Amino acid sequence: MFMIGLRCGGALACFMMAAYAIGRHTKSHDIAQAEDSRNSQESDELTAEVGKLRKELEEMKLKREADRCGRIRAERALREQTVKGDRNKKVIEAGTTEQEETIGREGDGDDLNLYRMRPIGWLRSCYRRRFGTPRQGTVVHGGRATLKLTSECNPLMSTCNLSDYSHVWLIYIFHENTNLGTKTQVKSKVRPPRLGGEKVGLFSTRTPHRPNPIGLSLVRLQKIEKGVLHFSGLDLIDGTPILDVKPYLPSSDSIPPEQVSVPGWFNAPVVSGHEAVFFSPSAEEQLRDVVDDLEFYDDYETICSTLKEVLSNDIRSLRMRDSDSAETDEKPNIHFDNLKIFFQVSQANTVEVTCVELARVIKRA
Image (cartoon, rainbow, N blue to C red; front, side, top):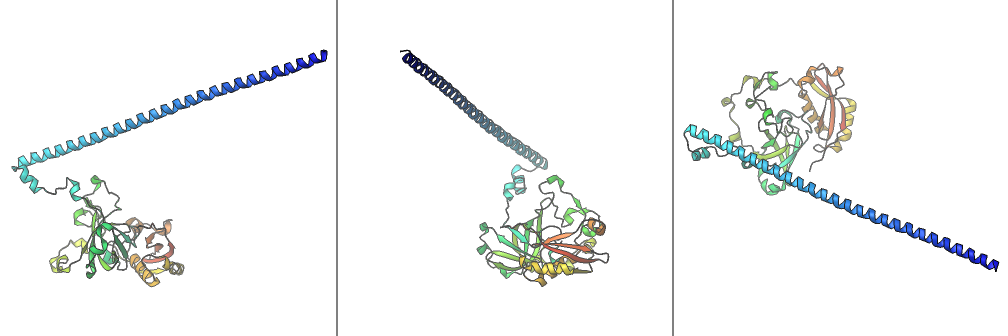
């Protein structure tokens, strides 16, 4: 009996311990579930709060943008009224009616929408940078370029019969001017290279830095292939936006020399050309090795003669000409076609091409 009692007591103790463990586990599980539920609720509340803040932020942005647009419209209307009032005042002082004055000032330039222009294409030129580009296209006859017209121009149709002309005028934008968009920075007087530092009025020169940076160049039209125009003898850099192409007409575009007058300084040479241009043996070998990588030239003789044309004119700036390159680390170079050409000018006024290497060129469509 005693043994039976011990066994029963042991079993009861084991049962009680198991029940206690189960109860403790259940309680822990309930606590964990409650904790998870509380965390989930807090997460939902936080998500809702973040969404609310984002919505308020968007509403604030929209309100600020609307206020800004309204302010701009109000300022624009005020400017227009001010300008109109000033004009009316001038009209009254001049003794003319507003209608007469309006007719007289059609196209006065205040409404720029009347003069909206867009390029008909972007020039692909052998002159990759401003440095090394000739001042006039007739200086380097071997320079080459192509113009792929935009689809809006209907290239195949719009270029019909243009190949009957040998030369065309290119009207373009000086897109690499350093003062583009700074209306107040256009200088009224400039220093032409021929005058050695003396100033003249900008409209008496062909400086690219003008109130409207528009250029005009006469180039030779070599051929037209599938709406792509091929030129030579130009002075435009790669990427130039072209606004228009017009045929050259000798009967109307040229004037007999005896009827033309120009200032005396115009006939003075810009700078004296170099006596000779030659390639070092290593540079000559380098040029021969990269001919197949060129875009506008496919033989050594043509690219070599064209580079000599470019470098025979002193393309250096006044600072470069006045400094002694032998005493500086500066190595003048030009980017021509897909090449980077390093050169040096000797005391005897000769140019030696010292190195030719392929340049990294950005391909344009």
